Length: 146
Image 1: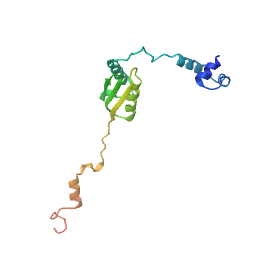
Image 2: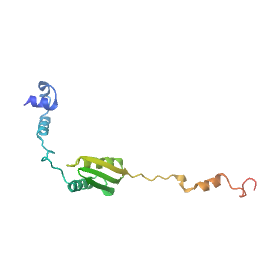
Image 3: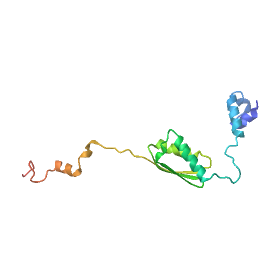
Image 4: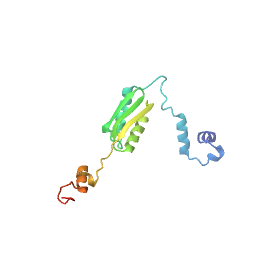
């Protein structure tokens, strides 16, 4: 076992760490060091059409986001999300999905959360009707001085 590798990867004294570290963690650390994902050819950038297609596909496929009112626009490698979603969690999730797409450097999240309309039991009485109830007009039956 290469204890120096483990110590450099995880940090700490090799003699202390080596017996305590499961083999799975060692293998995962080695893969992370050797992983070349995300390192493309020099001067390569993904086209806006490919990024937009990817964003739309991933938002559509995610079961936690209702993307039916989301519009995606791409300018270079920056993505703007506009429209409405029903919860803050969906708003955050849409941004996270977009941010993790290859080629995206910035996400401008302009999504709004739909406000639920709330009504209360006294909404049926208008302000003019309430004034008549509280202060009957002069000359009305039952009014003082009638």
